[in-house]
Length: 132
Image (cartoon, rainbow, N blue to C red):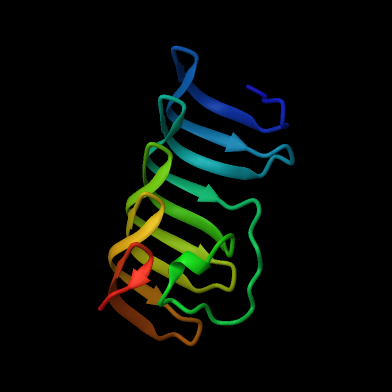
């Protein structure tokens, strides 16, 4: 199935909506999303690539993820109603990564931040902000 913006979908359908395992590709044939769909949105496990990633070269200040914006390249984990929700891994454009809990597209709960120097910060974040 091809869309007006040039993206395409390969996978299962139910009642004219994406349902079950599927693959969403950009018009350049790059993978945007591979995983589960339900009622036409990401639902269950999947891998999402950020096609508008902003490259950062410096270390990211993991105290406040609300400032991350588009500076990530890939998320792999769980989705609910099209949003990152549950356990997942977020890879930043500078190579650093966060592994832990997400809620409604925000980092929320226990997690680990893997810094570029090899250090690992294991803490709790609430609504994208480091708590303890």
